[in-house]
Image 1 (cartoon, rainbow, N blue to C red):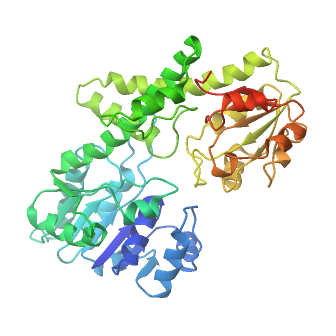
Image 2: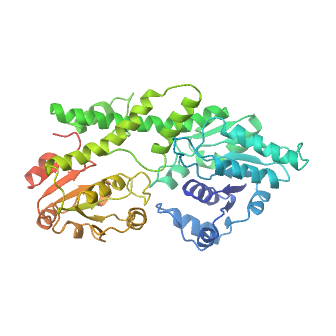
Length: 441
């Protein structure tokens, strides 16, 4: 089948490449000429395991094309996916200017039947608005009888495992206005459902809200565990034992029950804010989600309070090693990463920070900028040398079983603030460390 993917960000690039991998002809369109040129050469702008091989293979075999020519992509395709950014506005609402701008351009160039699929995460009512904009533009061209359909098909990709998630999805959600469009989209996604059909068709408003609701539910589980972890430290309970106890309940399950320093990334923070705002626009108060958001922010402050309390509020002249900069492992995504709050906090109080991350150092440097007290190393042990303490902020696998004896020898004082509960407190004490973690005794 023939597909046009408008937008080569995280969602558009992964989706377009994976559709091409399954035999479809895909045109990926972007307004950034430099980005398109690099993609044509197989240079990937994001770190996502396995994606570069898929892109290079399908470009070489002619199924995946990158272009700045929207008309070329749309003219050659039946499916036209809108996968542009919807960044948050200052009030938390989703900025839909890119989505609506693309809809306008589509209405100005289509010449025959198309299925326009919104892939970007958008509030309820957006896809209907896309249809209205396209219709308006067609009327300007005296093509009001030109037939097209719209649909909403949300992505459920986890950064770090996006290719696997797309190739073997838990489900595919299709929001449509009619059965014909649903059947076309079912055919497109059928190769990813060879073992079990998990395609869910529903109304467009339900599909739009399903995406937000899924991320909001996962964010709620994280904030609940983080708030519970604080209570655990007050009463001598262990959040890891509690996680095992409640996660074994089939009604709850173990996923997203890990206490830490809060969620980040491009989805959870943005989507929780957008859902709260959408509800307010409809006259509804999502009080639970407002608390979820507050708990997430408070969790990072609570972690920093641990550091401040240990040093009696005096950080000036101290040197901190940091392991992990990205918001989660297996990605270089720095959006809403806890490190972006924690590192400046330390620097502003006169401390020096030496950081290591397997892939996110360049991205972190662009965001944090140059600072006299901030430096980066290419080796996780090198950052420990002469440091007053280690702060573990991202749970990369290589941090799970380090050489503790070497760590203790390199650190000026064997102190670890573990924001991801990677180690056993009793073992760390036996190894000679002063160990601070999240909700564990």
